[in-house]
Image (cartoon, rainbow, N blue to C red; front, side):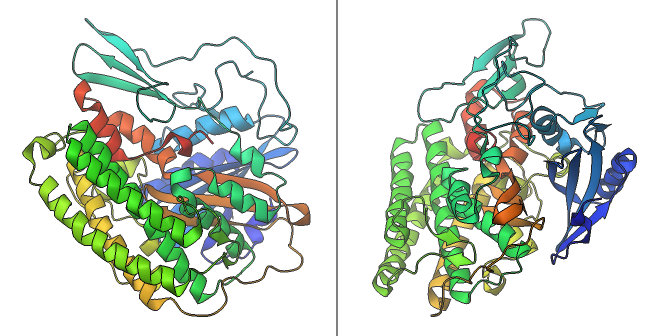
Length: 506
């Protein structure tokens, strides 16, 4: 068994499990209420190391199995743990480890002409390698019945949308089934992390999902900091809260603007888009980047805004909060808007729990999940606020949760500005970095929990970096929540989930 089972990282416990009994152990943990957080595969030479991580409160419980490279098969977990479905499809095509008994092993992320016997996350695959194409069309789940036909929606759509395809099965107006096909812009991000030194790896983490720059870079940095037992300075903790909440604000305003556009509320759409723009311009003052790039580094943050910039931010956000609250109150009294959201794309609590939903999508279905509270990081354990949840599970409830989070973000930013101390911004890295250490890092992005697992290799370079975005978790739930709705509500459903394809096409 790998040395991972013997490493000491606070809040993580690794348990070696024979691959033959892995499914039974997973089923026991799922039935006890533990949430699947991540599945990781790592090429260990003569074997594939398989990690299955569960949320057990403040502790991350990790089941660890070894699958022989000569016979890379294991009993599929999806039949007893539906949330594992996309992870196992990903493991099959990127690492070549086959889950026997999986109900749907169609390719998920790689191009349809990618050869089935080439696995890019194996160490033997070079980043410069360009395998010969094979002829294999994209496949979709067949839906049959009187008058049923399919509409290929995407991958190229009007407006500014990321690239994916939704194959919508319908008999006229009602949506019977949606088959999502991501992977049109798969970038091989996890392969790019391999052999990177830590400093450039932070920059790569920032590029995983541009509208969650802070969340991804913070989760990556935190994984390395936890592996190295680094304690970041108080000033850096509060600056991470400040920038993370600025990121949450502009993303939530963007979701509201898109929903307004769906309802042909042109004036409201322009107003909320303008609020988003105001936050982006303040981001430039804070970091030099509209998307807050260049803020985080391993051990802390890179810069401290001047007192003048912080004072201007306090003034600007106070004014913006007053104006946005007035516009939100008016929007919520607009019947032609809220009528399109109530009851749309309903996600029941049980289904959200079954598929391990995260973020506003989970909280709007009654799941009290927010890693700012569940596993506090940065300075969130010193902040005064409450997790916003709601029971209805529809598009309207997801909007209400985001509106509450906007108010909370303004409050958290005010607390950060008030509490920000003097002092150093980063803890120094050790002169020599041990090989083989690994840890998880996380951050609550505007879309939900971002999770990284980082393992260091030789000479301080990265051996394996697994990235799990909230969109990867929640997209399968979107395709279920949209079924039974009408075609004209597709945009409301999609934008109320507020997800991104970049979080899948890694």
